Image 1 (cartoon, protein in one colour):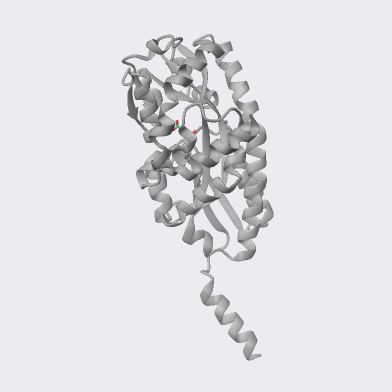
Image 2 (cartoon, rainbow, N blue to C red):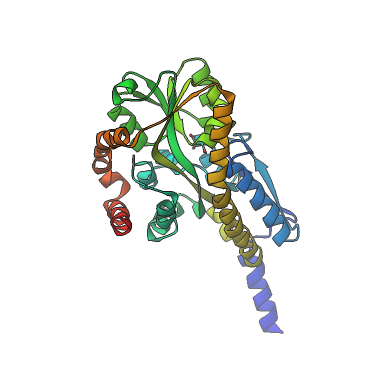
Amino acid sequence: MVRLILVLTFWLFSTVIYPTPLVIKFNHVVAQDTPKGKAALKFKELAEKYTDGTVVVEVYPNSQLFKDREELEALQMGVIHMAAPSVSKFGPMGIRDFEIFDLPYLFPDVETVHKVTDGKIGARLFKKLDKKGLRGLAFWDNGFKHFSANRPLRKLKDFQGLKMRIQSSKVLEATMRRLRTMPQVMAFSEVYTALQQGVVDGTENPISNLYTQKMHEVQKYLTLSHHGYLVYAVVTNKKFWDNLDPNIRNKLERAIVDATAYEREIARAENMAALEAVRKSGKTEIYELPSEEKEVWRKRLIPVHKKFAEKIGKENLNDVYELLSNIQ
Ligand code: LMR
């Protein structure tokens, strides 16, 4: 009997008592009908199902609660419980290692991206989040990024002098400078207006983002450059997550695993559908960069890799190169 009382007392004081239902606020910056938007809703559906409704997930799309930088600050403070920011956005909190995914022309295909995210490199990157009070739960992805602008982008010289919106990544900044453009960090929620008003001339993103933010209405030219890949880190507040009832946490982890499989399944199709819709709109001229020209662009941009080897971690870069050499 004494043992039972001791175990119960320990349990009571070691597990923060959350209200029932427990509400999880999941904020993100993209439209609902994108790979990330749909995956967040899938996580909501599965988390509520697996916990028999003892957990309720409130999804806030399109920067409804917080936009880019504020989203991560809110997560660190526990004001929101989950987010899935682009890995290009951890630099301002002092973690540049995730910018490995921003290196131009690094990944030949999504399978290689998954080998990095789901292997020792992904695990090493998530470890970096712990000291910032965050816990990495999964990597989601969107698709290859392409350039858009209000002038045709067919040769390197076409970029000269353009103001290009980027995410808050030093690798992306260096990439844009190699293209002789002026990079401008801006929250995703502000990009459409900035393009419409000419504050910036162009940007880069997967097509699902370009289309769902209606950027094709304010970008006359789209070049399918496949120069980068957009990866997301699904993250939670570490204290919140560690204090969950273990039984609940296990069910939420299962919901994350299943939502991740779903997200990866739909990402490619979502981007293909978005490209078709942009083509049908007739508002943007779509140019498929020929492979010989792509090689010229790759050669111009590849020095960015070496320049950032220190910042993103030589071990990470060497591991990716080794992985790439094994598949070629
Ligand atoms: C961007 O800011 O361009 C993207 O990261 C938005 C997103 O989360 O897909």
